[in-house]
Length: 94
Image 1 (cartoon, rainbow, N blue to C red):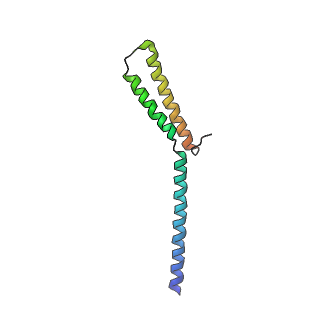
Image 2: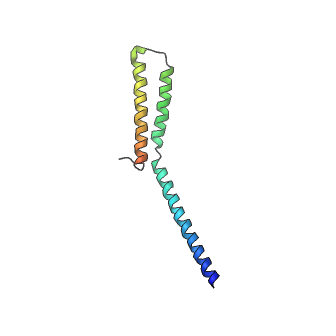
Image 3: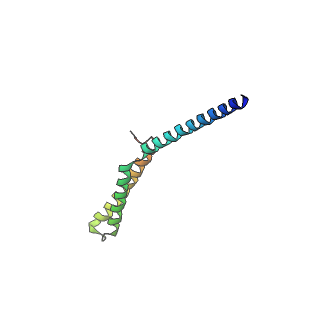
């Protein structure tokens, strides 16, 4: 009987530990999914493509191309800041 009670305690402890680990993993997964900013990530990709196109365009254009490059860089920075804010505040970022 002593062996059975030890086995039961060990089995129970292992089950509890597994359950606690599973709950932690599920919570981490839920937080990661909530923090993912799909629209913001797609916007960043588009902004980077726009920046590359502007940089490859012929120079000058009355200063408008250079100004557009600067504004797109600012937009990239703001979008990255928004993603970082959402990551720090659980994804929603209100």
